[in-house]
Amino acid sequence: MSKVTVTRKKLEELLEDLEKRSDITASALVTRDGLVMASALPKDVDEDAISAMAGMMLGLGTRVGTVLKRGSVEQVIINGRDGFAILTDCGQAVLIALAPSEAKLGILLYEMKETANMVKNMFR
Image 1 (cartoon, one colour):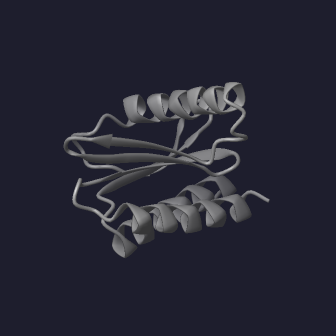
Image 2 (cartoon, rainbow, N blue to C red; image 1 turned 60 degrees about the vertical axis):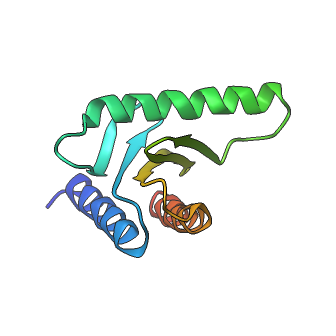
């Protein structure tokens, strides 16, 4: 088994574990360029579109953070009528997660930060 396969499998296991520990219903890890590294997304979700937008949104958030002198961006939160989309910086990757509107935001943010730290450690 190649290192790429083992890494992708390990990343997918992290995503599945994240979903088991929280109200997150879908998640993915993407590169900063918007390419999918691993995902646990429903079949009706366009994986390529989500990954491209995630990379772009974190980049935009970083630019806004710089202009507003808020430092480097750790998370971008979208609170929509039907739920949350949360992006978290993982160093070389971006973690994106979807959750219903009734989910507890504090728990989501905590669990995502924990998972992001695990991903960062994998790439050290």
